[in-house]
Amino acid sequence: MYSRKNQRNLTRTEKKRLVGAILELKRSGRYDEFVDLHREFYVTDAESRPRPAHMTPSFFPWHRRYLLEFEKALQAVDPGVSIPYWDWTRDNTPASSLWAEDFLGGNGRSGDRQVMTGPFAYREGNWRISAGVTDDHFLRRNFGRPSAPVTLPSKADVDRALSDPVYDTAPWNSVSTTGFRNRIEGWGIRGGRGVANHNQVHRWIGGSMGGAASPDDPVFWLHHAFMDLLWTRWQKAHPRSRYLPGRGLPAGDPQRDRVFALDEPMPPWDVAPAKLLDHSRLYRYV
Image (cartoon, rainbow, N blue to C red; front, side, top):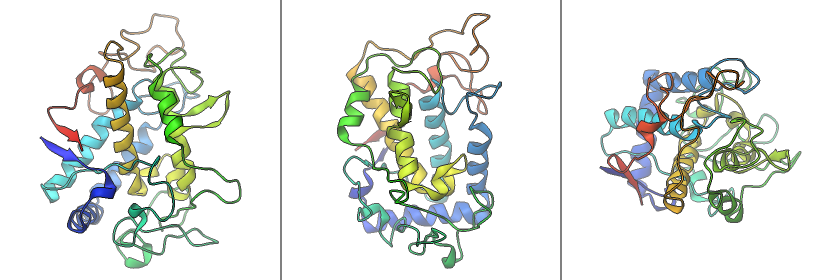
């Protein structure tokens, strides 16, 4: 059993060890394998193939396993490291501690949006992006997207999602208008316009966080650890609610063989959502 901490409570030594482990995974090539995995399984609901990671009920369990695999890789480098979480409802400005020079570095510069500070700045020589949103090989950020401003979600936004007692609803994709999963994942849930919560954060950061290769920005892991924590909070708030769909969809349903019911194994690990509903024997949030 280990703990995942709020990033604002990390000590200077804990930050240094986490950054060091991430940089070692990058140096070895292992980090880019995780980026490639996310790109492979970022399947939209416009595509006629299995969709385990996004726009789907398995958004939460798929990313839980994804984070566990990444954490296992980090701990092979440094057994004392775990993924912290970023509560963007509280730490919601460019001055927040995670953007400090000794941690994730800050915003991109004007023009090409290249990140110039921190250990993941291209000029430091340790962070070269090979297949990102653009052909540039540097990490990019564009906080708040000034040309078309976007804000970070508020606590009220999260609370509205947490209050929905139903996990997910048909059609089990990006246009599901109710259900906790899409209220948090945030595909056009606000009257069919714009984005919310999870997606809104990706858009606020911008740059490398803006597409299927979003793990190119190490903040991805802190963001998704918070997603995982919010799933835990929803489960505690609604102990009688269950993952849906609870069984495979019937023949003729357009989502059959495209979304994953409770006991249907998800690629690439061949593990069903049912096996990922409870993390309490592995880690805890503090």
